[in-house]
Length: 246
Ligand code: GLN
Image (spheres, rainbow, N blue to C red):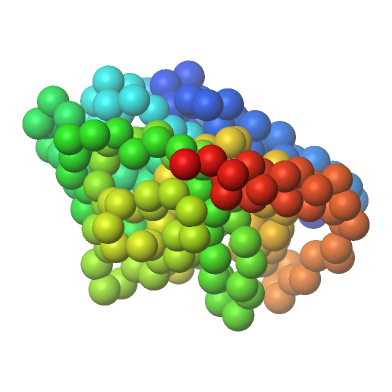
């Protein structure tokens, strides 16, 4: 049995569309396999110690919320970059993917510094990109479907060091024109997808858990399948619903 150390960043400021549900999925999918998790909430003014964690999670937030945390996040940036270089797994959602990049110029015209763990930049557009999303996703050798929900004004553009999480089959994705969604670099995943994301996307959840167990010094790890019939049915329904709309 291994205990995975999860950092939940800014849980009081960055948690829209029930994004905190992602933490519950990570905990349960570890417990169902005989492992456990310790979740540490790290908010404004609290120290982020890179050596203390195997997985770092940041949920979404409105521009106002991002402005509130921006200067504190800048103070944590060096430790966050060190954790990413050390192979800690990251899942940063929506406002999170924007702040994982180099900078985010928001709808007020304010440019917020990102922490630089994903090679991307974001600038607010005119209209919000809203709706259900279906992706053909690729992580390493794994190809799988991801479903979720997006609602963002930001338009994100990847640089050469970041790979897309997936190709948009339905929805807008990073910027509504490039056809890609999200970003992956080292063991960092950024995505615009809310839902929350992980309950309907077990393969993605297990990818993050595999990385975090490997970081916890388990070495090469492969998680036994959980027989996700119910979860797979939920994902199939979400895909159906996404294609039926718009
Ligand atoms: N404030 C950012 C935007 O509107 C992110 C929104 C979010 O986290 N849903 O693009």
